[in-house]
Image 1 (cartoon, protein in one colour):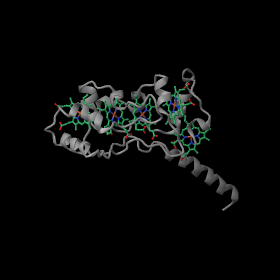
Image 2 (cartoon, rainbow, N blue to C red):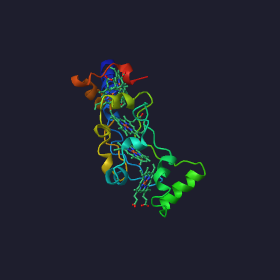
Image 3 (cartoon, rainbow, N blue to C red):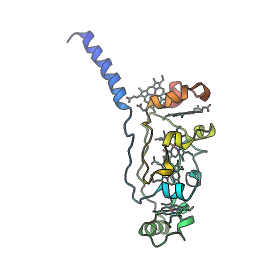
Image 4 (cartoon, helix red, strand yellow):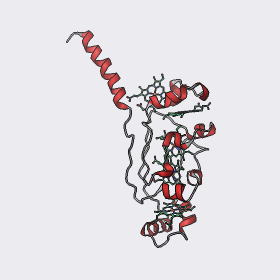
Length: 167
Ligand code: HEC
Ligand code: HEC
Ligand code: HEC
Ligand code: HEC
Ligand code: HEC
């Protein structure tokens, strides 16, 4: 094959790969070991996101709550439920629940929750209407284009140099 054609192929493939790389996992909604229902807790019972995800405004990562947080209520609420029994048993043994991770950026990307929360970006802008979800699903495609498009909005004054988001 002529060299020029080969390099065109390589360039096209590289850009296709880039295109195909995006949008992965949008809508991903794995079953959890305990069917934890955000719509029941946040929607119906009006528990604030930060009651459970209490590191989100202080740290790059948003923590999944420890079972002690669940037990604040479930030592008295719905104790006869088999799911709550499972939680109580694990808690008493000092074990945790192996929640399945929903959102996952590649290792070469760095994301920082607290920087976004400090600027008043809502959880829902990125995660959708979690308060209506019975099982969490990935709402945004988490592609580079998605990040950069928002950073480029003049009112956001957010950096777009590569090292902002890449190690
Ligand atoms: C009563 C505690 C509680 C409250 C309140 C709560 N969450 Fe959660 N959240 C959890 C638990 C437990 C998980 C892990 C299980 C799961 O994915 O459903 C989780 C998972 C998530 C995930 C997926 C994490 C991953 O694996 O990628 C997101 C996103 C999330 N919560 C956002 C929110 C938002 C936004 C709110 C408020 C609108 C909220 N949560 C309120 C307990 C809570
Ligand atoms: C602020 C109080 C509160 C906290 C904290 C809380 N829950 Fe709940 N949870 C409730 C209420 C209220 C209900 C609904 C009870 C009912 O249906 O009567 C409920 C229901 C549930 C149910 C459904 C039980 C069934 O069989 O119907 C599960 C499962 C559950 N919670 C898991 C969790 C987990 C896991 C955590 C910790 C990540 C947690 N909850 C934290 C208040 C809470
Ligand atoms: C600007 C977009 C954005 C906002 C705003 C945002 N998140 Fe996230 N969230 C993400 C991304 C991207 C990930 C995946 C991070 C990773 O894989 O490293 C994530 C992951 C999570 C996780 C899984 C744990 C982790 O840190 O990887 C939880 C829980 C979560 N978010 C909760 C919240 C809550 C609660 C709020 C609001 C208080 C919120 N998020 C606001 C984009 C956002
Ligand atoms: C909805 C808009 C929006 C989306 C989507 C978004 N960001 Fe941001 N980002 C912001 C804003 C606003 C700031 C705060 C800029 C500031 O502090 O001045 C910010 C700040 C950051 C910072 C901190 C920069 C610094 O040096 O202080 C990082 C890192 C970052 N974003 C990474 C990401 C990544 C990675 C994604 C995609 C996975 C993403 N962001 C998606 C709006 C967004
Ligand atoms: C605001 C955050 C942000 C900025 C700024 C950013 N990136 Fe990214 N980049 C991401 C995210 C998130 C991904 C992973 C998702 C994807 O592949 O689209 C990614 C993926 C990539 C990939 C891998 C693509 C693939 O198909 O695997 C390359 C290469 C890349 N970025 C290069 C760059 C370069 C070069 C710059 C600077 C000109 C840059 N990025 C700036 C967030 C960002």
